[in-house]
Length: 218
Image 1 (cartoon, rainbow, N blue to C red):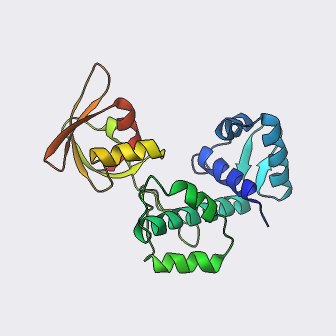
Image 2: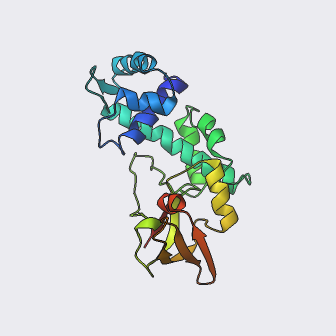
């Protein structure tokens, strides 16, 4: 059995490694969890003993195949629960993360598979993040930042790279929700803010930071 903390570490390493492509440093994990490097080192040794990670002092961390499968399984449960909370219980997309953080640790493969079937095998969660299938396969959409678009280029909002509740509430209030069709009319040279046309109807200006965190499919 794995503890909640161990599973959270595996998930964090997976995300910090840019989906398992990079070696993760102890300091990177320490900064993410806002704890001391010594505390991180103690947990990494435990995970290494359980063959969940490859760890050598001063050389960083990578997930073993077993560790990767475990991390992806936790991510799958988290995103399925977010879909359930939004679609079936009426939560808003800015309210579900913390609840799903608890539910993702329920250790029942039968429950996870029945939840997936009940929801109709969703491919993405309410924030546009891909949901791994039961084999651990993740189909990533090719998404680009609004800030990367060229003038008059169009796209459909399909994800966000910032998941804070305050940012999600801002997007909803501004009408920048998933599925919205946008056209970039101008990037303001002075501050990098972006002028958009939403669904060919309404004009809106967003900050450079917002434009860097809203993802569209072309």
